[in-house]
Length: 157
Image 1 (spheres, rainbow, N blue to C red):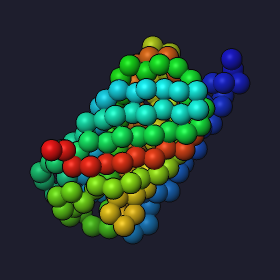
Image 2 (spheres, rainbow, N blue to C red; image 1 turned 90 degrees about the horizontal axis):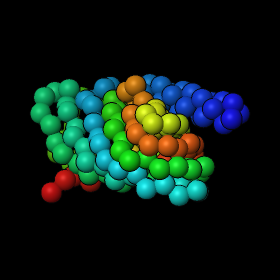
Image 3 (tube, rainbow, N blue to C red; image 1 turned 30 degrees about the horizontal axis):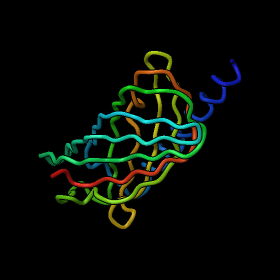
Image 4 (tube, rainbow, N blue to C red; image 1 turned 90 degrees about the vertical axis):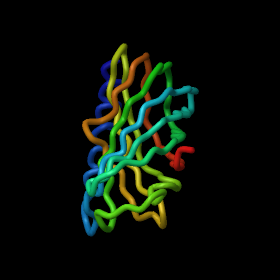
């Protein structure tokens, strides 16, 4: 059992390291993307559907819907997920719908009742956005997961 927790801790540390590297460079923090939803897990992956709101550093907000697909070890049942990302962009000014697009990165989590995870993602319009986890993700249920994540983010209707 300790090996499983050690593996998850290593995967979360890897995702956190990747996320700090993603936020560096010529990008500036443009706001925060906050999402909540539910997960369906399979042994070799999962699908998480989220309702999100982007809160711009420049003021204003915009609603999005997201679907995260994770491939890798994913065993368990999560009933709900809440995650927040710092959004890094080439400039602080993000136009309506600019965050829409595909994202890829690393993901890891562990849950027994209440748990934590991290998803560091890069993508959006011309791969110009980086999503760095803010204090990880909070979730309820029972699961262990680590792998590669992809997310499709679309403006809400």
